[in-house]
Length: 257
Image (tube, rainbow, N blue to C red; front, side):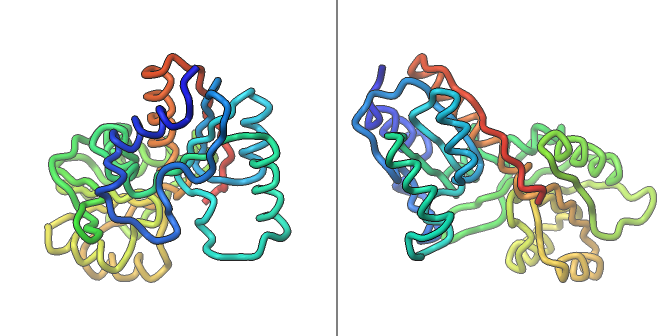
């Protein structure tokens, strides 16, 4: 069985963790180490108590997540936060987290995998963060209503739903873009307009984004924050399983958002 450091070094190299900028609370890579060799890998979108318990029940001692231990920022070790950390440490489970490196990866990333899930082929990037593009974009010719239906079918499989901002009947999507998770930001909307994008697919966004999108001539498809970020961690676990000949499991704990 491989040690944690060997797996983590492989993932850090695959994801270019050291080179990808991210928010301070992301802290990509090993967040909690363990001394034991890894026997089974669990993957999940969010670090939470229910996820840890289900991973332990499945016999895993490495948990791969997209939203890690420090996502809520500095806070006292009390209540639910204490219970998560105590359970993780007392069980001897290791924790590895990858946020923007996983969103942006060209093969196992959330954005490229969602595009292909929806029958779209990326040709370029969008959603610039410092030095990198987080999202993907491309050209296609598809009814916007059909694209929404594909997104809804995908979201429903992961306990969510999809909806769109205002769209005229018969509308055709010709230039699309995807930024998973909380992808409907003011910067991404401005970038979409500059690039001639007519349909933006995201996980979630505030109410005002639908208002602005309508006046900008863009349709936003909101496919669910959780659902759109299930793909990367699943692919990452499969990579580890294949590379190190380890059993893997995906822990599905939908938020409904």
